Amino acid sequence: MEEKTLTYFESSGGFLGARSGEEEYTRVRAVRLFPFSDPDKYISIRVGSEAGEELAVIRDLTELAPEQRELIEHDLELNYFMPVINKIISIKDEYGYAYFHVMTDKGEVKFTINMGGTNVSKLSETRLLITDINENRFEIRDVRELTPAEQRKLDLFL
Image 1 (cartoon, one colour):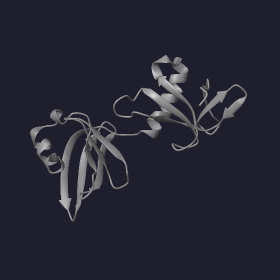
Image 2 (cartoon, helix red, strand yellow; image 1 turned 120 degrees about the horizontal axis):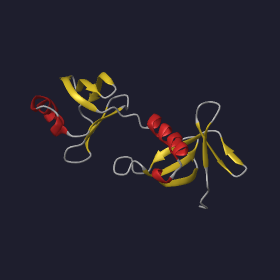
Image 3 (tube, one colour; image 1 turned 45 degrees about the vertical axis):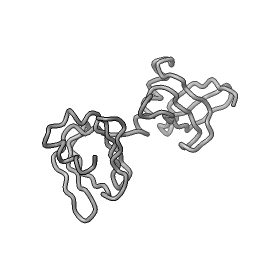
């Protein structure tokens, strides 16, 4: 694939757009190639959707001009919305489902996961990714920062 030099803009619909010479794409999407291990490096710019044609790869967001980086970061924030769980209020297990009531960096949330699935993933020894039945993702950055009582509530999933 020939490397394209793109400049980014906000399209009239509020989407991320890109230009390369005379070519203009009014809706592109920024996709992290390594979303957990290197979230600010290797960002794929694709036409339309995550499965769309790849136009370019940004090797490192810090290499972009500030206004260009801000546009890409805004698109990534929308595409990778993942509240961070700071406190576990309760977890109830009923009929094969776990009902979570938590406090996140975005506010208080209640969500449900299927107990039989792989909805709680260990990203490291201390970092968890929880995916609810609607495919929303929540992150616990460090289980050691939770109280012992909160950690016991998670024991069922670890």
